[in-house]
Length: 289
Image 1 (spheres, helix red, strand yellow):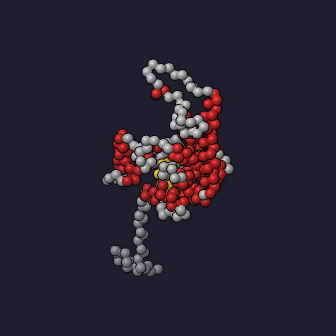
Image 2 (cartoon, helix red, strand yellow):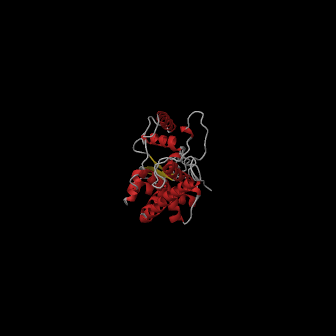
Image 3 (tube, helix red, strand yellow):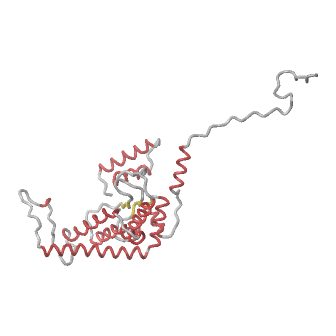
C-alpha cells in the first residue's frame, strides 16, 4: 500500500541491481525488502562510525517510538525499527499502512502524535537528557495537531470551521488575503494545538513508565541486532527471546568469508631411520689411521 507505479518500478530495479551486485542468480525477498526501504526512506549508511554513547541514546529513542506504536490500537503497525543510519536519520522506526489511507480519523491523528513523542519521552526517562534527534518528530506532531485544528475541524472549542489559508483553493485572479481570523481566534488555535500536544505527551509518559521493562528489552535487542522487524518487536514485548544472529556473529562470518585462504606449508622430509635409507651410493668405509 501507499506506493505508486513509479515507486514499484524503482523497487524492482533496485532489487535486481542488489541481487546482481551480490552475484545472485535470482532476486530474493531480502533484496526486495531492502529495495523497498531504500526507495521509501533512503539508503542505509552502514559505513558511518557512531559513538557508543550516541548509539545507546538512539536505541532508547527508537525503542520509545517502537513500543508506543506497537501498543496503540489506532496507530499503523511497526514495519521495522533500526539504529543503522539511513539518509539523514541516525536511526528510524518505520511503519507500513496495511491499506491505502484516503482519510484520517481523530483517533488515528492522536495516535500518530503520541508515536512522534515516544522517542523524546524515552530519552528523558532513560537517558536523563534530551537531544536534537527529536526535531523531525516535533515538526511532524505539530503539523498534525495544526491540521486537526485549522483544517479538519477537530476542535470542540473552535468548532466545524476551517482556519487555514490554502493557496490551492483560491480562484483564478484572487489575491492572498493573509490571515482571515482575529488575534483572539489565533490565540485559541495556539491554545488548542498546545493542549493536544501536552495531552499526548503525558499519555506517552504514562505508557512508557508502565512498560519500562519492555522498553529496556527492545533497547538491548537493538544494540545486539541493530534492526528488528515488527514481529520481533512483538516477541520482545511478550517476553520472548529472538533466535537470530547478532551483529557480532554476522561480522565474524563476513570476515571469515573475506579472509584469504591460508597457504599450505610443505611437510619436512623425515630423517632416514637407518644408514642405508636415502643413500644412493655405497656405504663409506671408516678410515684407518
